[in-house]
Image 1 (tube, rainbow, N blue to C red):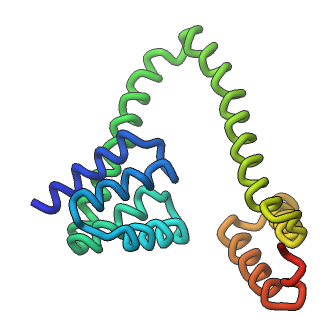
Image 2 (cartoon, one colour):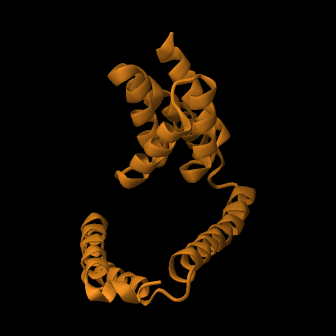
Image 3 (tube, rainbow, N blue to C red):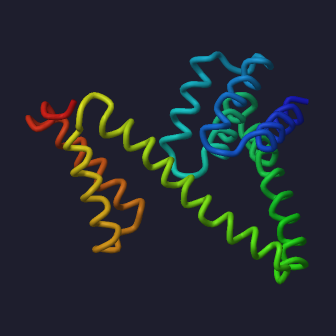
Length: 183
């Protein structure tokens, strides 16, 4: 019974959120309403899910499922969170092939592309304000970001390796006397 409840909870979470951080309130509500976790445990699970590689929804489903009902609970929760993605992908694939050459679809995609770029720009702007300007200009964070960009663009370093290098660099800087320069 718990496996079905986990599955259904994560189906609802997947269908009613847009992924990423929009899932957090829904995960919290489901975990608390069923009495599966305390608010502190939900916070810990979200923090762990954010730190580990992979999508937040799948990581949260894995950790919440394991915490609630072991490995089978994690499997049930992950299957639940996959249902919306698989359903949507199958529907889009079925209709896209049928309407790919349709001029209305082409025009719609022409309008969607700039909107996506605008959304990405808005996200970058918002995160930049939070990360670099929250308590004055954080020059160290700006330099690490510039270094990460250089690693990615000029040196073609993989994203995981870039993250590890920059995390190590940030740790070394924060523990050194230079760390006092950061706000």
